[in-house]
Amino acid sequence: MEMKKNPFGFSFIFILGIVCTLSSCCTKKGCTATDGISVIRFENFGAEEVEHISVETFQKDSGFSNRTDSFFASAQKGYSDTAEFVLLLPKKLSLGNDYKITLLIPGREEAYFLNKFLINRRGCNNCFPYRPASDYVNDLVGYSLNGEPINGNEIIISK
Image (cartoon, rainbow, N blue to C red; front, side, top):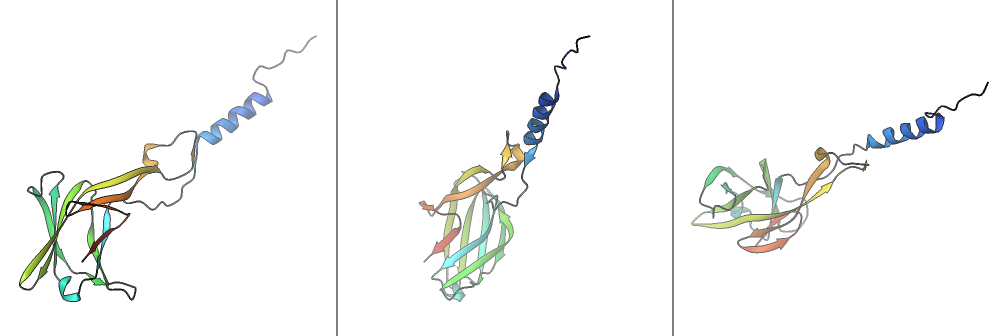
C-alpha cells in the first residue's frame, strides 16, 4: 500500500507559522514625537520681559482673527548658563492651530506669531510586513515666526 504525501506537510506549516509570527511583529518602543508643543524657549530676553506672557490660540489659517483659547504663563530660567528662559506650557499646543505669544512688559507689549507648522509623519516602531495607523508619529521640522520660516524641531523665540 502506497502512502500519500500530505500537501500540508511540516514545511508548509512551518512557513505559515513564521509568516504569522512576522506579520504580527511590531516592537513597542516609546517614540519621541511632536504631536504638540509643550515648551517654548526664549533666548536673549531679560527676566522682566518673560515674567508675564499671554498665549492665544487661533483657528488655523484664520489670519489670527478667530481666537479659540487663551491663557497666561511665566517663563522660567533655563537649565544652562546661557541667557535662556523656558516657558513650560500648562497644556500642549496643537500643531493644527495658529498662536500669538505676547510678552506683557510694563509699558509695552511684544507679540510673536507662530503658525505654518511643518511636520514629518514617520513610523515609530519596527513593524513587518505592515505598519498599523496607530504607529505613526509627527515630528516638528519647521514653523513660521512672525512670517519668517524657521527650520527646527523646537520653538525658539530670539531677541
